[in-house]
Amino acid sequence: MSIKDLELSLNHKILVTGGAGFIGSNLCEALLDNGNRVVCLDNFATGKRENILPFTSNPNFSLIEGDIRDLSTCHKACADVDFILHQAALGSVPRSINDPITSNDVNVSGFLNMLVAARDAKVKRFVYAASSSTYGDSKSMPKVEDVIGKPLSPYAITKYVNELYANIFSSTYGLETIGLRYFNVFGQRQDPNGAYAAVIPKFTMQLMAHESPVINGDGSFSRDFTYIDNVVQMNIRALLAKDKEAINTVYNVAFGERTDLNELVSLLKTYLSEFDPQIANIDITYGPERKGDVPHSLASIEKAEKLLGYAPQFDIKTGLKNAVNWYWNNLK
Image (cartoon, rainbow, N blue to C red; front, side, top):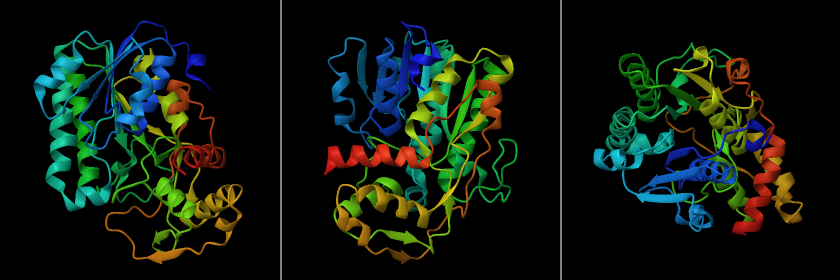
């Protein structure tokens, strides 16, 4: 389903924080394709200039290079904005374990700055990236929005605090907020490099280089891997929601199926071997489990289906084929 099928009216001015990042740049592209004016706020700590390079010649696109930890920058970015899609954050559980202070500064203090600026600018709605890490040690499956456990990492704490702050700003100041708990998003433009690269782009690039991917644990850990186009759809539906029951709450953003890491690598090898048959014979290496990792993750998407009309179009196989094609054609 394309963004145009959702009938997002033209001429909105929409701020995308972290707009040069993986998810943010895909949101910018979809919004611009539909004729909206897009303001991208990014400090390029993790975002990439090449992600937004195709948009810079579009008169409807503007870039503010700045940090959400600076309140004046947030006020500047929110000026005359109709909606905010807040994606700016420092992701990664291992990163937060290694440096909890910076993760908290960006994900909590920066988030609060954005809420204050959105309130002051009288923005119509603040849609923000929440996280499946909020479920913590909850063993219930599938994950339902109202049942969470204790956080297992500093990152998870920061994302849960975001939800608490958003709820307070909704009830106290009347700011409309919607939180989107992302479940292991993957797809085009996701960075395969660096110590905190996500598993799909990292494994893809290793296999393309004929290197053995390292699975943490025995490969039985499973995730509800969610293709980026499903995430874009969900963000737009959150912007368009009109029912009061659908606003000032949180939603799971996922496909609703889980895949373990052994299955994931097998699929990657299958799709990549269509380009390079030798990849099918690459061995997999197994290492120790990572601290803070949740063993299994599977989302219920019933709430999003009911209240927002969410209808994910890309399962893990279709999404992986698209992602593999993009990595092969763009990064080989």
